[in-house]
Image (cartoon, rainbow, N blue to C red; front, side, top):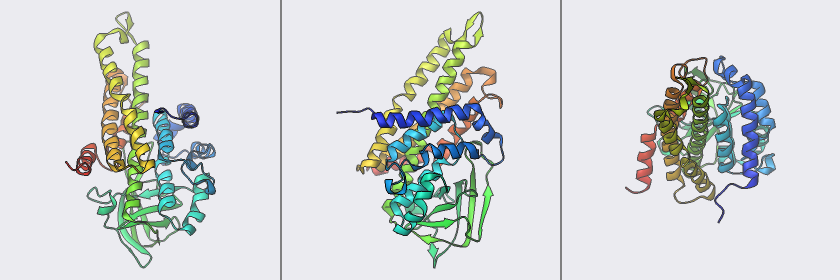
Length: 358
């Protein structure tokens, strides 16, 4: 039995990682982080040209026809690079339309989204940390939507937003009237959020049921876990590299036993977590009975691991670790996003326990 990735999967991840690291390290990450919009148009255009947007889009729509595992491999690579932009919301919109959209909606949007000619996002969370479909209060009445959605990724830029409503989803186009955006002053400036209010906004119903909508939310949790793993690995690599080159008392600080143990413990925490999100993605693609539980556990555990990696890496870097000029703080803030977005680890552990019948 083969437990490793296929050659094609490893090649896909390497292509995304090489591109994202080269461009992000060359300035795209800082440009977006310090800019007003958090969006680097050139970086995004070339990422879409690479095919990252269409990884899980159907082949008939110009995509690769792959699954959430392949999407998560790309998410890990982007997390490692600290890559800015709307990747998470965009690919989730493709997932939602592929799974829940009508034939007309698929024909209209999937080819454009897969090619990067249009930008998509999803609006899931509501007040009171309602992020699961069985708790959504928003309702579509006579083709109009009146509700508020919280923490939506790049809704101002999106050509189409997949909005979670009671029983499934609805589509809202960029040109639809009566929607307002309230940008949030978030710590992670590589990914920007806004609250969105809809006031009898024209929207299209999507023929989805609650189980299909649940699958989209679970996919989001897996992608966040993969991003967190990539970010944690990058912080560990940064800390180890710094420990090898920073000298104190006549030698590199990496020779001090206290720091050695700290970084070794972190490596032992990070690497085994790879299998957790790999299996969560695999279970999602195969429709395994434990897919929702594993998505919740992956999101919870990797959120904690990433935060611990951020704390340890900043401490290992000493006085420069937390400064604006040094990039460790970018991944620290990205860890805060992955920890909190769509619910903190404690909430997902509670859901995992409920799904296990504890």
